[in-house]
Image (cartoon, rainbow, N blue to C red; front, top):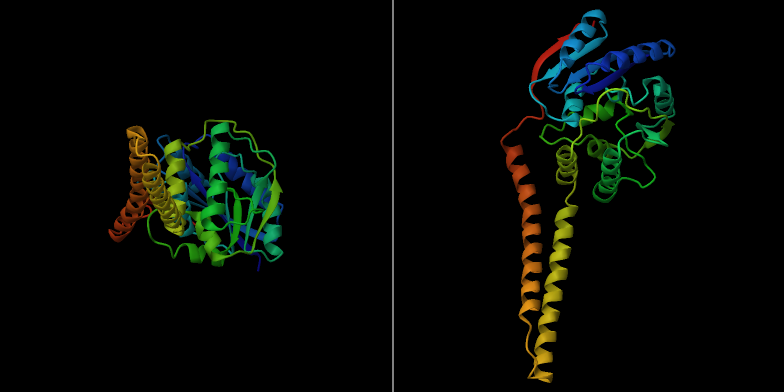
Length: 311
């Protein structure tokens, strides 16, 4: 029996684009006769009529499932919600704006068939804004430093994974999900394939600076303790520097009793050490706060409505 491919698409402000993405998936999968497919569209509480469009798509196409979240939880939470509805042997995630080409999904599936557990699309030239590209670079550095991502591995929002990866990911029930971290902690058998990245035809990216910062915090506080270790190293370094400076000051006073110990240098040292202490306490507080929220069983997402007429 042919394998079932599940497409999971988080949707936000995509009323004008999601229909074209679904049509492109349909057209592409007709040329891949060895696969069956289903589509899970997750509306992340869009302020426009995105879910009404999803509702109409579900009424026309029985292989499409629509999930409506009660509030905006973010792209990764929307993906996690969609993962709970997949039935496929292979799960493919892509964007709702048409910039990730569904017509090239065959490349990802072929790579999966070679034996890889996860395959990420790699773009030679990304057609994002300068701000979004900058955010991607910071995310690249963060995942490499904090999560141990191999330097040669390119991470994007267009990827395919085997079903056991998804089964492992949905075991994570705490808030602040970070899909990349969940994949990296499950397998290292990951590959890249080159695909084209299209220019955005309609609208703008839903990522703001606040959302990007929140995503980065999710990554390193939920899946890494390296920030705490870095804070410890910096604390030891500054403590040693302060101790050595104190010895230098005492020796200098003995050598030259007439020297005036500078008030400005003292204040600089106090301000520097105080700032470092506040930074360390802030990092620790971030971890403790997220532990507190997790202990209160804060949900990853809340589903307002689900339209599922799949057979």
